[in-house]
Image (cartoon, rainbow over all chains, first blue to last red; front, side):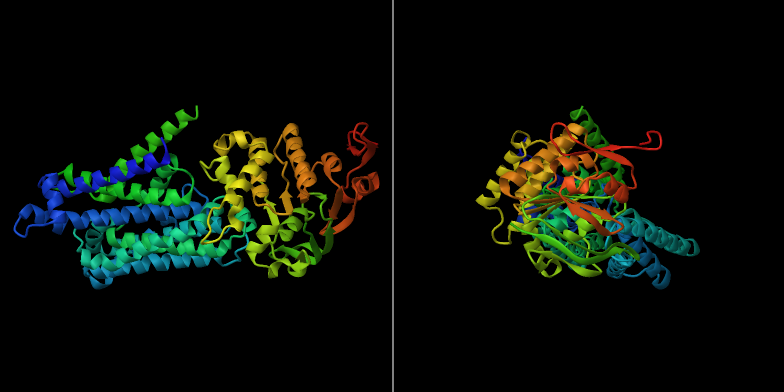
Length: 331
Length: 263
């Protein structure tokens, strides 16, 4: 199968997932009505109102968050040359969680906008500390390895702070628990607009760097030999990861699995060229998160299973199936 | 043609000094091999020549200009480096890997030109990889993989080629294959080749110029016949040996002695 066909299939899968996300829920809405609600809404039609006011926003959030996390994960894996790297390794998730826990402990139940802002700042601050610690004793060698180690250590530290605070403040625990599991619903698009803009800008910001990323993937020494300013590129990539995953965690809470597995899936489906690989990750990530959300809201009605839980439930078996297929293909 | 030289270079890691006021001029259009015992600084010298490490003092000169003052893209058009044990990105094909060598020749507005395509095809042909170009690098044998990396540096189309132990972890057949390839590149394209090798007998066979390094300084340099004497080998490596003349190739051949095989 050619790359073009594979990309087209990914686009088709994404469109099917997005449309089904408009149709599925507590109340089934047919595809024609869903599309009409999207394109040319009639003001009094209740079904169309549901599509526009509830299902469209959560679909868009799932799309942006899924794509952002997948691209951020791909950047981390290229940056560290470590297939197990994910944005969480920069302390993004633990930093955001700690910020939210702190906010709840101090201010009680703050507004959603305050939570989001806090989460984003917490994520950015944690990543900045990780970067500073990793790059402090000189940048000459093992930068990415130090980054991974510093990230793991500081993530543990932030998580410990959060847990300590939550043990003291039991009420805060209830408030924070659902957010911790990750969710894409119940957010007004207007509140999320700045975060979406950040994610989108960072996504577009990857485009001019893709060729240099291809070279960096061949190793730091090789990249420097080929005229890449490696440290500048690494710093830019970390900045993009912070923007993408920081905005995601602020929009939808902790959804950790997408950034780890989507790049692996994309690598098995698409050529190892970031100009194709990164858009492929974005498409796959968006599709996976939308599908996870659709299933999460339909299997246990009237309750909903958090999307962060569903991504792991769906993603892990898919990932294992892909690994097995890969093994048999290579004998 | 291009030259690379080190003038009074001192460099090291953290506080540990590895090279101590080292000066060396590497002859243009020849194959130079850096030899020395483990930890003597030969790899560090190669990395410093390729400006992967910045000297604490002294200068590396590329065509007579201080290398750290040249734009990194300019350097990458004159000097190619193959580091020790490069690892290919997962799933990359031979052609994609070799194409990376064109990076220093590309610019923002002109991305992939006919010249880039031609250089990649030529690099594949020179290294005997045309047939394998669509294969994944991770499906190749060790020798083929090393040829693919060398093909990348060939596509980079630089007059200077620096290689850090290009034959390590390869069996003898593949070591020969890689060295033959480098010799062809030197003879046919006039590339100046500088590399670190551990096998003295292969170094003697393929090198025009040997630089023996000991404790961060150039201990001796010259043709293989000048450098590979029993006394010199003992001074540089602390190894007792006898040097005979290879009956087929007339290059020096080192017969090592050890405690169990006294001279």
